[in-house]
Amino acid sequence: MADSIYDTCYCKYFNRFYSLCPKHRLMAQMEATPETDLEEDPDYGWVNLPDIILEDVFTLLYPKERHQASMVCHHWYQAFYSPRAWETFIFKGRVLTKKKFHPMKGWVREVCPRKTQVCLQKLGFLFKRIIIAPTCDFYSLHVFLSILDSFLEMKPLPVLNTFHFTFACESRSHAGKNVFGTGGKILEEITSLISRIKGLKNLTLRQLLLDVCDLVDMLEPALQSSAETLTRLELINCSKIKHPIPGIAQFENLQRLVITPQHLDDEVVLLLAGMGLLDLRIIQDQYTCDAEHVSADAWRLVKESAPFMRVTLEVRDLCTDKLLLQPHAPVHRIIFSSPYSLVAEEDILSIIHYYHQTLHTFAQVGWPRKHGSRSFHNRGDEMLVSLIRGCPKVRTLSIRERISTATLLILAKECRGLKKLLVRQNALLKKRDWPKQSEWSKSFYDWLNVTSRSYDLVNKEVTKIIGYPWRPLRDEEFKWLRV
Image (cartoon, rainbow, N blue to C red; front, side, top):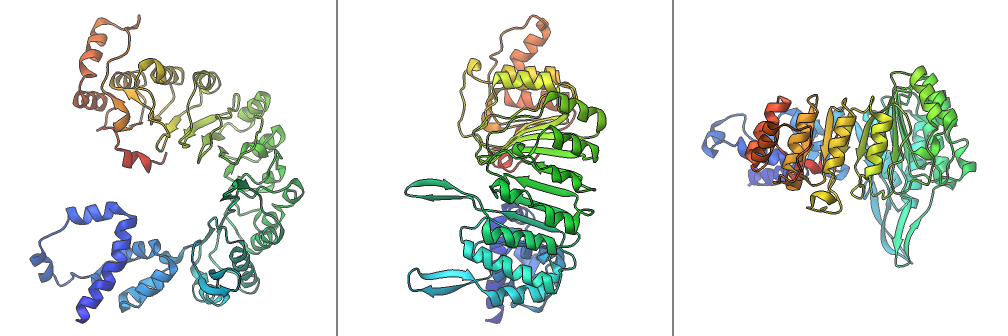
């Protein structure tokens, strides 16, 4: 009877682990051995799992589930207090909450101060990263921030070096969508909290949408506490309108900066180049306001003063705007992760003109919003081939739009230096729809006609050309692709 109870407890948490990571369930099924052999193995059983697997499971569970799992057996109790299980603390949903009755609202969940204090007292010394996810319960958010701020004032967390905060700036109701910024008490708690984290290495602030008057002193607490230690900074839509932030250049050892274009201008870019920044990522999303690009003269000076700087342009989330190109910038990567992103012909021509000597990665990731046309004249096959021809240094090419097998073969032939060629299997059309070009020989044209009529032949030829085993990716694989 006791064994069946224990098996039920073990299975409960591993079923959640497998639901979050289906890959591990498939591997477990593939590597399964007959039950009779397992029963004879003295190391078989949930209680004898390796510590590293238990830590993986605990990192995927909510804090309440981790506490429940720790009461299953002594082995799991020890895994509960492992540093790896608590190195990342995420505040979201029902974490550290309890039910409370309000006369006007009824039963609601609010952050429990006692739970929060006990959690910080007993487990806070293990936290390396604190991530605050978007939440519409601003009262609970304020309570958690104030408790964490007071705790850090009395007892700093020794290994905490990362703080991520994302504000829920959008609400939906019957009247429609409403976008607003933060400020007031929440902004005061955030700035006070940042000032108390000494030796911060990674700071992320997203969707604050502040007024200009609040934005002026936003980075002062971070400069006072972590000016020499901060290496990664992410500022996404910190203001509602265009407002450059030259104070970024005061972080002496900054290596990566992720920022939206409304916070950049010629002065900021030149300051970043002077401090030796290596990785600059310019992001656009659905909350990014209208902004202008940095001047071409400023980018030319950046190339001279900071030859090792690499710039990434990315359109992400649900952004429907066109990619804001930075003329003559040292752009190393261009990424389209928004499902609404479409690459127009004029964009390809501008990319070739501006970045033909620097572009190494051109990637479309995620699923598109629309299937796209099957007609050759309405697809972007010719534009992609022009891009590869015009930017010979491209080493990573990821395509989510519909292309034909003939186009895939031409891309592989044109750019022999490709190290990663990623294509969706469901977007690959078995077609030979290219008209004969004047520079093609008869043997090449015949080879293209024959090979493009079979998926197997295409896979073999692409494998032969690029020099490693190749196949198109299934949609599930392409969905989780990271470049």
